[in-house]
Amino acid sequence: MNVFTPDIDRKPSKEEAAKALEVLRRFAEKALDDEIDALDPGIAALRDGGVPYPDLSRVYPTAFRADDAYRETLPDLQNGPSSLIKGENRLIQHVGISNFRLPIHYRTRDHGELTLETSVTGTVSLEADKKGINMSRIMRSFYAHAEKTFSFEVIEAALDDYKSDLESFDARIMMRLSFPVRRDSLRSGLSGYQYYDIALELVELDGVRRKILHLDYVYSSTCPCSLELSEHARRTRGQLATPHSQRSVARVSAVLADEGECLWFEDLIGLCRKAVPTETQVMVKREDEQAFAELNAANPIFVEDAARLFAEQLQADPRIGDFRVLASHQESLHSHDAVSVLTEGTTFANDSLDPKLFSTLFHVG
Image (cartoon, rainbow, N blue to C red):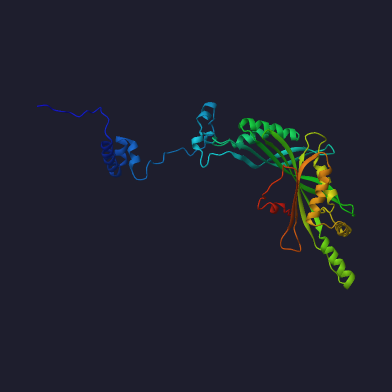
């Protein structure tokens, strides 16, 4: 009689493996932990609930050091293959970090030096087929230059570094700060600090670099129409009336010329003060308040006037190329604001506006 024994070395079929798996599952559901451990601890994974959570250390390993060999084992999803990209595989114009802060040194026009808290935004373009960037490289590149006294050259050096590190073709850095200038009152002889919101922007696009200086200038605007109507009421009816005026803000943005003298922060502030002299006051006594009322009456302006007056000063300065003026008169008469936008050149030309652009012009105490 011939006896056939099963071939124990052959690969089990899919059906045989499925039956064996079902048997193991039934065993795992009813067996004690000791029985499972004695057979194979991995069988516990077949229970409802899956793999039990491992018994991990809850003590912080103060003595552990990450050496180069260990760092090589760490996952790096940002620099993963294009197969990990989610969504449309497209170029991204801006990707990076916003509002990381550090102290930066600045020179003033009178050769003094200030150290001011500065908010930095740094972005690069991300090509299609690249999953992402290492965000911390932007910060590390900037910190490498942060101890130097500020200049646009320092920003350029930082931009060169992280553009190289991140292998990108376009890059941008913006630094925002509050710049203090001591201002005298109009008549009382008092003085105090006026703070100006300033941003410096360096943009490289298609191999061309632009240096841009942004300034928010806060002033009072007296409505010319309201002033004339108030005077009409006084003259014709002996009726006391007051014109309406309101706190107003202009955001002036100027592309700096490649050659020529430096345009200091104080210079751009001076151009704005010359264009619209009714800057809000810091220290005020009664004689200053009266003087401010007289100053406003001597310089009544609509929002259209403001945009053109700022443009007149910017246009005449050879250190300035393209520019933009955003003006917002935050009305005391109306429930809405009066706004205007005036641009020179292609840098700021835009068919569309950010829906909340003018709401960023509110300056509160």
